[in-house]
Length: 148
Image (cartoon, rainbow, N blue to C red; front, side, top):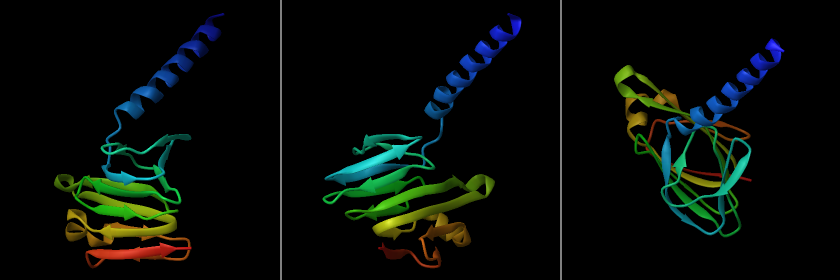
């Protein structure tokens, strides 16, 4: 009987922590503009993107046949996605005081415009865009990528 109470207690703690941890995760950016069909997939759940929706690491952003979205990240990086596009924010960390910075986004399909923010100036080797065929490192400020 005692082990059943322990298992139940552990389960309650795990479920509670899962909700609490997600609620207290630090967001990495926000949706600045959106039009048409745009969704965000987070932890297996899909919801409609709206202006001021917070963006987190591992979010998958998907635009439909009429969808477009503009994102602004904590270091002022801007990503604009065109129609029928999919991007995963693999890793974003911006803690310049601790010299901990990285930005990795994976473009699965579609078009995306990337305008670098503060991180590219501070640690250009820490900023990468990944595509199915290549990895793009930054030494400039603006790039347009199209993935079929």
